[in-house]
Length: 479
Image (cartoon, rainbow, N blue to C red):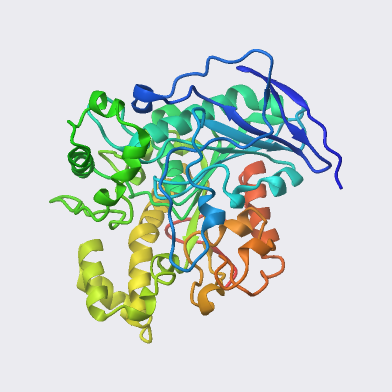
């Protein structure tokens, strides 16, 4: 058994005591901002006032208020974590480091997914020991989600969850050297909603100088709501709560009531004269921006940031297979989805059918869903970034199929995460309802993918040629 000790590190807010074993040092639940209580839930994140003495950083953090989520027969608990674990100070980071010493190691900061409504540092998939093993300081963070994080309210700043991520990055800049990390060599990486947030950082002026590289896993450079769309969600929330749509009115409402009205926000029609719903009803929350991040890169640090970006080949399966909808989908379902997601629905269906003439309606529906939610926005971001940044864009595709749910889950959304975090052999990811299914993970795939992420964080080269829209190079993992 490894022997444990309790190293103490000084941070700008005070000293913290972590946990050391023979593998690495772990520090948990370190606040990067003040607790967002009451009216402060709808304010920008404030600096933490600090503490005296030594803070215990060996226990996991509370989590942002969030609803429980389930995906049919599929066990998504390693992804979502325990759900809402109440506590005041949940704007925190966890840190895995080889050692809190004077070394200047690459730093990777992970932004979790969860549809802008769920997720936390407590999710088992985000265990960072493989990163520390390979000489990287890994930081994971909590940020505000749902109504406190992303509801657009008069009297409150927009995108408060994004402001939290920026605050966490500023904390990393100021404190990570105490944990053996190099504040001048920071890579932000995110998945799903976290990837969309990471992409938005490229277009946000306040993000300048906070990171050198970004990895965007199954996000979308076109996933933001327009202000008009956001106003519809705000109106629906205010109506459900019986209050006026202002930050002042919302400030007095407990988080339990916010979670209680979530079902009333599901399925809102967010199509407008100028925009479709980029999330196709899967979440009532997203970033709220007048211009999509892929079209606003010139406003932020994108030109100076190297980007690794990609997605999975069967992203849409997650929203159909666990619920039994892949087999029951009809041609009418395909046409309904195409009409909601595409400017030219008939052409979209025809193109997919021509590419996959033997596809079932469910497979066509999944392909159209994956392209609309992730593929098109990822491609647009890759092209935009490569044009403005020179040889700083690298593109990947993840094609390894999970054998979960009778072999049907496939290379779906989230399935790359166990390979990125080098956890694919963990038993809790296997079995028919586990993310990776009953079959063992392919040998060397996690080593290859995790290794590429590490290499990119070290020097910006994941091991394959940069992307050029005229000669697109895409690295395929698995398949």
